[in-house]
Image (cartoon, rainbow, N blue to C red; front, side):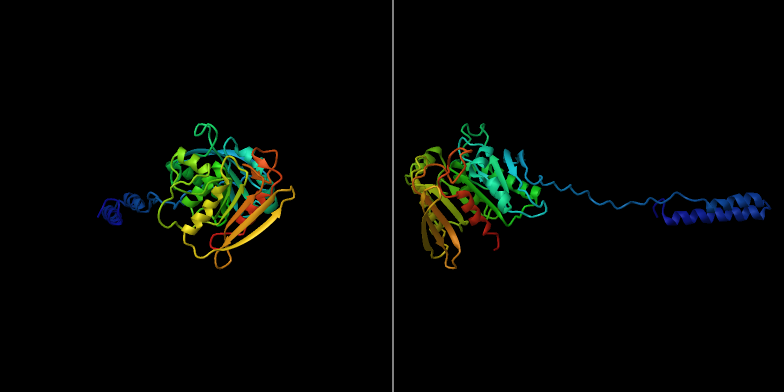
Length: 348
């Protein structure tokens, strides 16, 4: 039996008892008493191992209501700067999250001012995340959507923005079933690509003055597409497309208006069943005429909503003059995107 076990302890007690008995037989009672006293000495206290619970990471704290914070997020794909707006109201709500990708020459703060998304967030109750492109990555702050390394899940700019999105969902306890992504120009093209790369993260996509996902892997092919010239399309059936809302000015001189048709082309190639078309025309309060085409599946659920803003150029329709590249006279693209987004949730 190993040393220090219960058997050793019993043997020691037996030896002490025999010693005390011999001393008593030799008429040495005091010595016998001292020997017996050893039996009742307290031994070393057994070591009691306390069960320790593994320390859980403290849950990050959502920024206070009404705050517009700046930060940097590091992932295996790289480091990205961002601005995050938390709307006024109860901090305990699990709110939707809208990711907004700015265009070339813009910053996150400029894009927030031009789209008025923070004001709508207070009104409708959602979080707004504005990733910001670094001038080191692109001197004009364009998202490099044309580069293959930025078009795949888990890599490049797509990976950075998806990781940042997950970080904000965790930070703010956002509703993961109600996460949306939108952008303008290079940001619009990037939003379409990132939505396609992460269909289990984003629920719907908004594209303003952008290019649909296609076989574009060089700057030259991107410029060709932006000029409205057809580029090679990948063969075969496309995966199911996320619900998408598209805005484009028919006087856009930067990204040709014909690019809006690419979203319908991709929807048809995805083979999502017969589509029905409903067309609505109207005029905004600022005097811009518009045509709105709604492509629905058999159940009546809209899969694509395409807005053509007549007389508008390369600018955010209905935006604020406080931001760059806006057309205050047009219908409110921000509000219409939010209507389209918030009507959708994963699994619903």
